[in-house]
Image 1: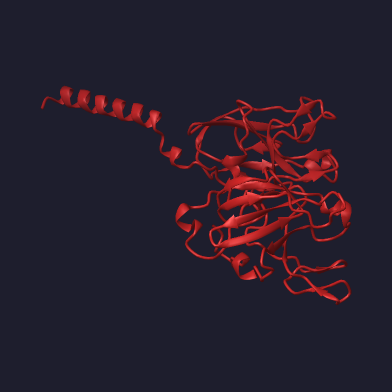
Image 2: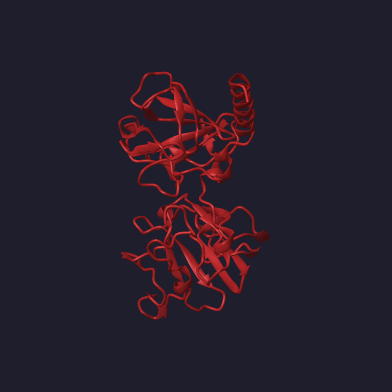
Length: 320
C-alpha cells in the first residue's frame, strides 16, 4: 500500500475513534463520583449548624431562597480531588468580595458539569482525571467560625448532585448476606454509640435507673446527616417513640428481605412505599436540641425486640 494511502487510512481511523470516544467517554461507566475530600471517603454532606444546613434545597437568606448546591464536609487545608474526569475552567468566585474562601473551579466532562467552591485549585485550566488531586480546601473557619467546613458543590444546571455523591451499593452485595448497609452518612461501619451522660447505646444497656433494658442499638449519626435504608423492603409509619412532639419524635418502619426494623429519631422522605438497600431514606433529626451533649444517634429497634447488632456490624474493610 502506498505510504500516502496508509497515512490517510490511519488518520481516518483515528478520527472515527476519537468521535466515538467523545460520544461514549470511558468515564461514563462511573455513575457515582469519586471521593472529593481527603478524610471524607463517603462524601458526607454537612448537616446543620448555626449558619444553616448543607443539603440541596435548604433554606437560604431567611427562607427567601434555596440552596442550589450541596456542602461536602472537608477540613480546612485538606486535599481536594476531582470527582470525575474532564476539563477545568476558572477561577469561580462565589462571594465576589475577595475573602479567604472566595475561590473555586469548574469541571466539565464525562457527562457532568460541576463547580467546586471554597477550594484553591492547583490550576484553573487543562485536563484532570477522576480521583486526581485538584487542590486544597480553603480556611473556612477564618470566615465563618464554628461552621462545619465544607466544599460547596454545585451542578452547572443547578440540579441536585446528591445521588452522584452517594457511594453506590453494588447489586451483587445487596442481599448476599445478613449484613445491613451503612445507615448514616459519615458512619460507614455502623459504629454504635458508646456511653455518655445519658446512658449507653448497646443492646441490653440499662434504662430507667436499671429497671429496664435497651431493646435496640443506637447507631452514631450527626444531626442533619443523610440516613439510608439498611435493606430493601416496604416502609410504614410514622413511628413515634416519645409521643410528646419533641424535635426528634419521628421515624419509620421497614419490613422486607427477611427483616423488620424501626429507625427512630429520623425524618424519612416518605412513610410508605418500597425502598431499596442503600437508598436515601431521610435525615437525622436535631438530637442535640433535646439532649444537649449526647452522642447523636439513630435508635434502631427490631420489630420483635431481638438484637440487631450482628446485622449492623460490618467490620474494617467491609464497607459496601
